[in-house]
Length: 143
Image (tube, rainbow, N blue to C red; front, top):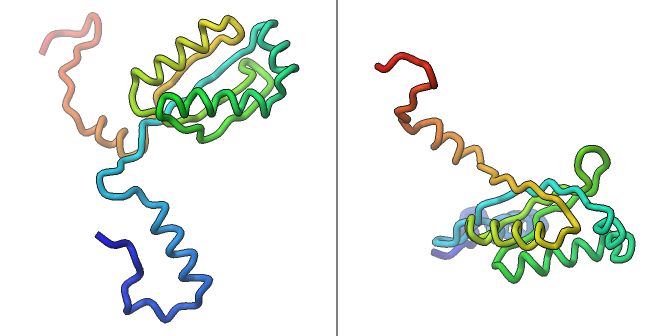
């Protein structure tokens, strides 16, 4: 399936056509679904903070990108913060096993404590809400 503008809408200004073409190219291609997304909430240990001071934030971003690339994943965003966590990372990974591998390798370094959270799209949540689940709360009467 070709993703080009139909001839009927071709007489648009070149700038608008370029924007439309860019949007069309950014859409997932047939059979090329987007990967699951994950959130890492991380806190550096004292050793990790020393490493951050040495590597700088840009160096840590590059290290995360390299680790994800090796797993077939991709960094979406990274934000440093102050408060309960030092850094938040949103990334795509091919599957839960790859995300777990990243989590384990990061935690095993001893330089950072992390929590990995799988993220759901609105569509995925709607699908989950639509599933019938036969669950009984503890202590509730059996139906």
